[in-house]
Image (cartoon, rainbow, N blue to C red; front, side, top):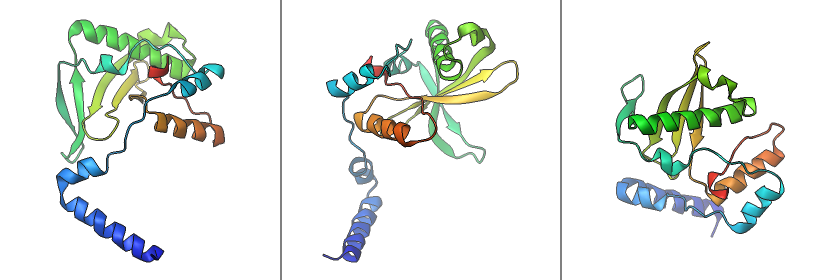
Length: 177
């Protein structure tokens, strides 16, 4: 079968799937692969593991949420989560500690100057990530980082990008600790 014919057949198949919304969600979902022992050993051998103060499942303990809309009032498919007062204090401190590991080699002296402005949860997608917005209260600068469940195929991709890129990537896989 010629390559052009294969492309046309693929497009027709994709068009059919797109016309059936339920099929779209199932047929285009990327499978998740567990992190195996060999991958854990690799990260341990090269000192790429770290203990983090919070887990993905801890962030799932939110009490409720509200939809997040963009500037044109379109649904972004993210929801802003809120937590009980006790959970929020513990989660905020843990997220600030992660931020300091990402941006200042773990120097926790800056924690009082940081504020967790938002914890958003993506309701659509394969990995269902959390997007964390941290703001420096001195200068109102903010940064985002994401918390996702570990998936071996994503980790291999990130590691390959890390090895080939002239810039360092920072990623941690909580489940391999």
